[in-house]
Length: 495
Image: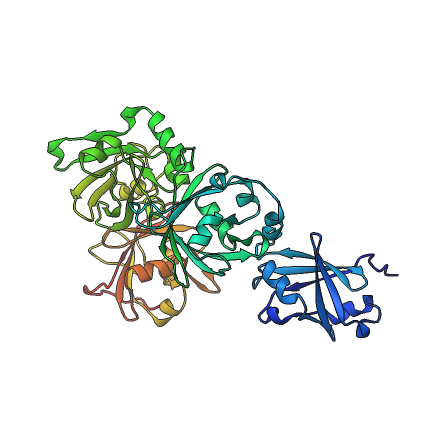
């Protein structure tokens, strides 16, 4: 026997058209006595009540519009209606992150705060644009929004404004936030998107922020930066970097090397936080302090990465793009690396190489050619001029439509690959390496993962001839893939 709940409830997601009203679920009508005779319902939230009209089973008109606006309801929000009896509902509101919406409740709190503490509005013409500074309070982090200084909002026509707000940092990265207003105390606040913004900028209680208006149109654009003197993740890393032995970051002026360069050691923060400080002496000597520009890094194989050079206080660092660079170069904590200036213009170009004596994955692959090969020659594919087993074929349509490259079964069997499911290193003619995975598919054997990336980055097309050469057949096999092979083909092996 089912026991009816003492206080039944239902939930409604906010969908398009919600500003005109919401429907009570049909299944919930059994809890509403004489529901067909009720013309009004009461919505209750945190002690305040809104009278709305009931039309059939639809909540609409009356104060519904005020309820929507005062709580800044948005698509994706979730409302829970708990029935208290006599057509009265206690409403809980959750945003798209499933967190309770508490903007309005915070605004209800009658805090006699000094306006100067809350935020300072500046109209310093020397700065260029109207701006304000404010301090990150606990509610900004726990409740996911931030109230603007009232003086600033009034002076710049932001009261009663509800629109998208674009905020950009000093690196020109942007966030789409929501600017909203509440009738309570006529306050303007940044709501939707603030939580993500705060997390991605590592904001914490006590940080002092500055927002500057760039444009103030239908979709305002603001600049943002942290001006706090407190400890931020960037400053913490900077302090850690400076506390290390100065000899670990050396600026070198060895003329025999050819160009100015420096060596440094990969620290833990370089990998976990996605940036790397330059030695201060080097940055000063070559005019890199306060520089914000693109930086091109090239390795010994002439592969290049576009990353961002930036400044924080009196320190210069490599920021955007560093994380990808570190991953693709297999960098790890403790590696010693060297950067050499090639050109130092508007967009500097630097050479890069690992000078650590420890064996890194990349160094391991680079040393392969120096080691003896322990592999059988393929009985199905032999070439008189080669010591390594290989086959020659063409790119088939399935190689493009599927993320797979099949190897000839005879070649795979003769080299002991058919029963293996393992990683393989695939190298092109420029000696650049890709990690792929071997495996089986029905009666086929070949590269089952990683092929698409290799194919796209080498520009392979249907009909291209290639030579697949197994140069090492160890625990992790290594193959040389000669793209667009056009030499004489001794024997073409069809898949």
